[in-house]
Image 1 (tube, one colour):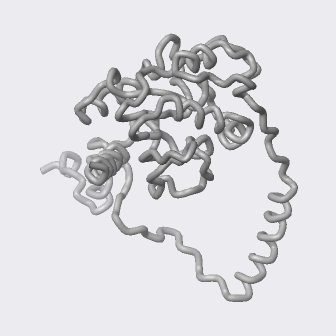
Image 2 (cartoon, helix red, strand yellow):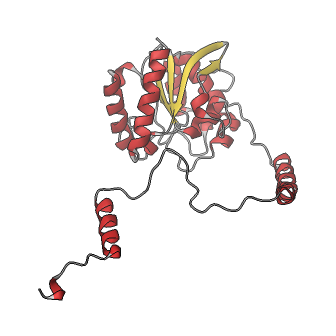
Length: 258
């Protein structure tokens, strides 16, 4: 047989063929339950640990002490909305909520005392007349269907009035939007809150670095509402693994709250 027509059976050829197969199947990474140190650094000596701690912790502490705090503004004013109808009007027309003004704001939708309030940081890019009207909204619709409900039965709201890419959630919350959301939740008075996105934590009165999975209650006006904080819809859209984790947490949360 002509050697030019024989398949290449070398170890290298077999390896490349296997890699090509897994890439074609959509597997680009090696996943495992346990962390693996692929490029582990040697363990530092006690002297190196002490020197690094001395060099890094003191400047960080000094920087935190000198960092200016965002100016807190009373966005609710002297006559806060007293019901949801007044809230929606305030949300869409109050000029002082941001520097852009009312143009482009998207209102919450739903009735007071809903069994579930779904809360996101901001409207989806491209929203015009309805909150979450594009791909994130489509994913939310599928989630609600799996839950055995739909948008007509929930209260859907955002912490910010318009799509805000790369929002400094800590500064916005400290600048008055935490109080706005607190008042909004009090008016909506839901039985449970599903908050989507880790960066929503500052608006709920928590640090962004806090373990969002450990939060189970939202306290407002001496009331306690069951709370579940999960990854954002945008994150879940590209990750079946996050979708599965969310669903497991949802099932456990709803079973425990019955």
